[in-house]
Structures are given as structure tokens and as C-alpha cells.
Amino acid sequence: MTTDPQYVTESGDDRLAQAAQRHLWMHFTRHSIYETGEGHVPVIVRGEGPYIWDDQGRRYLDGLAGLFVVQAGHGRKELAAAGARQGEELAFFPVWSYAHPRAIELAERLAHYAPGDLNRVFFTTGGGEAVESAWKLAKQYFKLTGKPMKHKVISRTIAYHGTPHGALSITGLTTAKEYFEPLVPSGIKVPNTNFYRAPEEYRYDEKAFGLWAAERIREAIEFEGANTVAAVFLEPVQNSGGCIPPPPGYLERVREICDENDVLLVADETITAFGRIGDIFAIKRFGVQPDIITCAKGMTSGYAPAGAMIASERLFEPFKHGKTSFLHGYTWGGHPVSSAVALANLDLFEREGIIEHVRDNEGAFRRTLEKLYDLPIVGDVRGAGFFYGIELVKDKETRETFDDDESERLLRGFLDKALFDNGLYCRADDRGDPVVQLAPPLICDQSHFDEMEQILRHVLTEAWARL
Ligand SMILES: Cc1ncc(COP(=O)(O)O)c(C=O)c1O
Image (cartoon, rainbow, N blue to C red):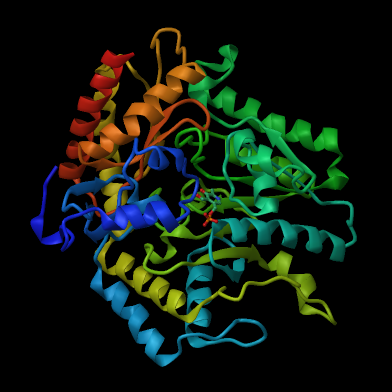
């Protein structure tokens, strides 16, 4: 890890960390470790390219692009400048019955990238709101088109779709939901496509496994009654559970099943869009046409918050007539500053060939991470593009996973902190089987892949020794 004295706080003390402990309620955070003095709040003060620095001047490789967000890398002055310019020209105006140039231009640009006739862009401030908007749109659409019973949604186990009540209901993580029950009713769950954890009889045939998983969606629709099911929500590559790609033929079969039952297919691309999988929208790489795309995170590379739900012409059609409107919106949706930053980010993508860079380097990223297979703790390396999960196991032969106590000791007690202390910010996640997740900025190259591999090798070797 490199220390850069230029960024050590003036006082050299941990004043900021202490104030954080007193006042900052961190998201999804166990505050007890700070209350007991067991942990020290990491305070990140600066970023440059794929690196970040903390308040003590230590440098880390950002192996998670912040939170699957900073596609173009940190410290891009032109993105900050685009926001500043827009702030001076028109800092705020809503898109509630009015429009402003940047929201219009961004909507046009997103429609241009989106597949097929996904031309209608509804702005939000993040992914959860986009998911929430998509479910509400699906419900209203079917009410307006004579199928008022269609309201249920199908999604996959362990998948995360956000924290608003509706999005949380679509989420397939029991632990994330239990304190907030009862949630919005009608969220039905089906298996995800983690091939490493496929039922025994499908373990050696990925295609057959994919078709089996798709059939579970058909079965759920039949069981619930097609006349009550509005939509299937899925990520082209599922994040929670560790970067789970779709088996060959899976998405195509899901599309057919949706068509056969007049059920909408929603691609939740909150993480997978904007280059993460080597296209502006990952679903295009898999050649399947969704009815709605939800997206956020990488749209601005994190220089301002933004999200969107992009719907097909068919879904917009009933809203063109009479007194009908979609009675839904967010004050900050389509914010001029965020929209200007998103446009500058997309310009940067084109000028610097970010998509081509991911396509040219994704194989090298995979091969570099696959070197870790020689470690006894590494069971599976999976993912796509610049989005990988490394599943950790107790026994490679049997694929035995860790029990709750071991998982707690390994992931929370050791791995997260050890990786960070060794100069790699990434995520050790146990929402499902334990995985380490990597989703670096899309400007990374072989030298950064090697740096990740070396730190992971060192820390995972130690983790195994401690077991
Ligand atoms: C697939 C998916 N959907 C929705 C969300 C929620 O997005 P946000 O935190 O912007 O509300 C996330 C967040 O990680 C996500 O990964």
C-alpha cells in the first residue's frame, strides 16, 4: 500500500472518524464495532483514476468502483466541470409537466443506446426508485389495458433490488427483509442461476441447468395464475450471491415464457449497465429484448446521483390518451446537474472507447482472477465483463460452504479488513454463499488486475491458515 503524505489530514489525528462515529449513520453498517472501539471508521478523502486515499494518506486500489459506480475512474475533472457549468446555467428544475434541455438530451441519448423500442425514459435518483417505478408502471399499464388482476412480480432468490418497500419485496434476501415485514404483497421468488450451486443432476450441463431455472419461472406463473402476474424482474448478471451470469439459453427461454403469458420482462441493470459487462446495457450483449430496463449507478460514473426506468413504446401507449397520467415521480428525478454529468460521462465513454476497453480486457481480467484457483479456499470464479465474484469454500471437492460462525469469523471478522489493510477496497459478501466481489473502474488494465490478484492471494492464503 502506498502512503501519500500530501493527503494526511492537517491535524494528523482521526477527528473525522470520531465525528463520523458520533453523527454519521452509515448505511448497512454494524455500528457496534465502532462503539466498542474494535473498529476505526475508514474515511476516504480523495480519488484519482482507480485509486482512493484515506485520511491517513494511505492509498487503496478501488476494486469495487465505489459501489459499482465509478466507471470512468476517480478525479475526472471534466465530469465535475460539466456539473459545475450546469449549476451556473440552471441548477434545478423539475421534470413534472416541464422539461429542461439536459433531461431531454439525456432521455434521447439513453433511448438511442437502449435496445429495440425502449424509448421512454422516466428519471429517478437511483436503482431502488427505478425498480419501484417499474413495478408501479407494470401495475398501472395492465389496469389501463383491461387486465387489472395482473400485479404480482417474480424475481430470483438472493437477488438485491433496492430498499423501498416495493423494491425490497422484489428482493430475494430474507435477512434484508425480515425487520420490515409485512412488505408489499405479491413478490414471488424462483431460483437464481448459480451454476456452481446447481442441483446435482444439472451440475455438468449449464444449458440444461439454465432451462431448468427458466422453467421454474413458467411454473411460478402457472401456479400464481398468468392473469395475476405482471412482471419478471432479473439482472442480466446477478450481483448478490456473487456475479452470477445467465446460462446459455436462459434469458431467451425466460423471454419466451413472458411472451406466452403476457408478462413483462424487466432487466434490472442498476449495476450491469454503462459498460460493466461491455455494453451500455448488458442485456444487449445477451441478445434479449426486455420491456423495461432499470439503471442508475454508472450513468454518471458517480459524479452526481441519477437513475432511470426505460420503458417500451407499448407500455407508454395507454398514457398518450385522455386524462391518463402516470401518477408517480421524484423531486430530484432528471436533475439538471446529474443529467449534464451523465451526458459528459457518455461523451467520455465514446471518446475514450470505454466499452471497447472492457471488451478487449475482460478475458485478461478473468484469466488473472482464475490464477487464484490454485488456492484451496477458492471454489468458483464467475462473472462477466469487469464484474467478478470469487466464491470461497471449506472443501473444494465437495463444494462444502462455511457455517454461519465460520462465515462470520472469515468474512466480517477477517477478510474485509485484511483486504483493505493490504490496499484493496472490495467486498466480502455473505448474502448467500461467501464471495469476494470485484468490479473495478472500467479504465483498469493488466497492472491493476495483477495488483488485485496479488493482494487477494496473500489475504486468502492467510484466511485459509486461520480456519
Ligand atoms: C440490481 C440492483 N437493483 C437496485 C439497487 C438499488 O439501487 P439504489 O441503491 O441506487 O437504490 C441495487 C443497488 O445495488 C442493485 O444492485
